[in-house]
Amino acid sequence: MNPNRYTILTVTTLIIAGLAAAASAGGLFAAAIYRGSVFVNTAFRGNDIVTLFAAVPLLLTALWFSRRGMLRWQLVWMGLIGYMLYRHGSN
Image (tube, rainbow, N blue to C red; front, side, top):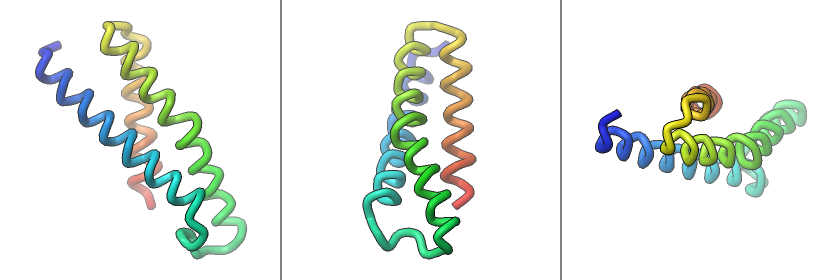
């Protein structure tokens, strides 16, 4: 893969991880973010916990290993990018 292209993908991934972490932290720690029923608010907070404490660290780990040429981690990386687009693009 072209080194410049990999740099662009790395920077884009870091931006996505930072924005996802900020959005999830805001949903968890700001009281008035979600204005739905108790069930919906609980579901959104559960998604925020998964994103903040599982998906973002795993995304950064996958980025780290995929930059070293490990194909399996490249697949995990792309899967997590898809998760971020699905999860944060649907709200």
